Image (tube, rainbow, N blue to C red; front, side):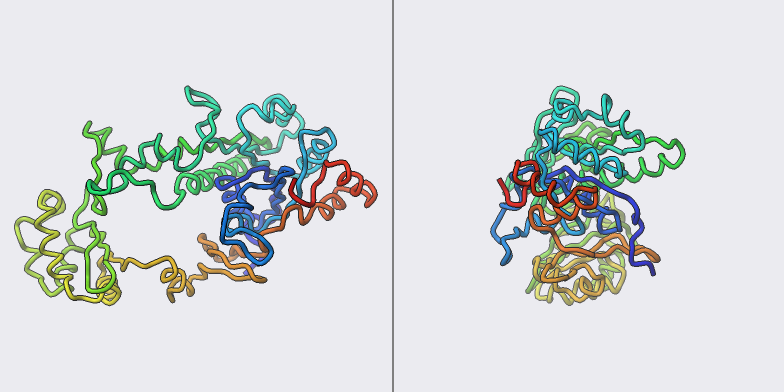
Amino acid sequence: MSSKGALTGLKVVDLSRVLGGPFCTQILGDHGAEVIKIEPPQGDETRGWGPPFDENGLSAYFSGTNRNKRSISLDIRQDEGKEILLKLLAEADVMLENFKTGSLEKWGLGYEDFLSKEFPRLIHCRVTGFGADGPFGGFPGYDAVIQAWAGLISINGSPESGQVRLGIPLVDLGTGMNAVIGILMAVNERHTSGKGQSVEASLYDTGIQLQHPHAPNYLMSGNPPKLTGNSHPNIAPYDLYETSTVPVFLGVGNHGQFTKLCASLGEPELANDPRFADNVLRVKNRADLNDALNQLFKGKDGVAVATQLLAAGVPAGAAMTVPEALNHPHTRHRNMVVEKDGYSGTGVAVKMSRTPGSVKSVPPAFGAHGREILEELGFAKEEISDLIDSGIVWEQPK
């Protein structure tokens, strides 16, 4: 197996901060791309999002999305900083940024007017909050704000709890994945055209895209979704059931699975109950079905029964805590926790047979590779010292 990764040779200049953009470039870096993270003089603000911090002051939040990168801090608003950026772009395949809409243009670095002409093979990827155009075009966006505007909060929670923010920044993470997809599609198209292009991945568009099945349900029926807690609007049984230990989630998608569920729980005749003969009837009679299943789960050990059901072909999950999930034997077997030089993080999710992704370098300290990167660009040591002294290049946050 090659240890270099499928994207070896792809050079990425990452001007993004916070989550969506850095998550995108971490995925590219995991699979072999060379990623240079350019931070503003004050640094990526997630360096200060904590606790927790490690012994070197690195926040867990920053650490989670910035491995396999080198860091340099530039003030690209100054001409000398801009010139360094242009030297990096001359060798790059991809530039990713999440500046406020219009910032690049204000600095004379707009894609249409400058970058596409100066670097015709460059792929420019922009991560935005609401997109660059439209009634909300150019507005800043954060994950929970987009969850609200895209209706995601409205479908999360129960009638008792009311609307609840999703517990992970799913919109940011999904936007980062969309950015990866867009970049790699542009790389593939460039093989034919020889030209780069601009790619946009917005949090708002991603938030709307993620509204499955609630968006198609509404668009077909005209009925607005309701809060359903752990249950599913289209499927039953699809819910969380109490046991004597941890709850168990069932995601039974067809009648064959339902038959196996009933047999595994020691009540095979339940599958023949006319109220539960198919999914439509199980959804209609959801309350009766849940009452019956709650009785069958009562007194059982959650982990044991969920494992038993999985082995029988029934989609079932014991409700693990985060520590339990990260330390589970299957997580470890799948290399979904990685450790290197004191760093611990989640593993590489996409498995490649010949060119697997890997953690080659830990998340960088602020500006840790500035001198190294400038030397590679041909700057002399004296020139580098002058750039640092004049506030073009930074080695400590402003």
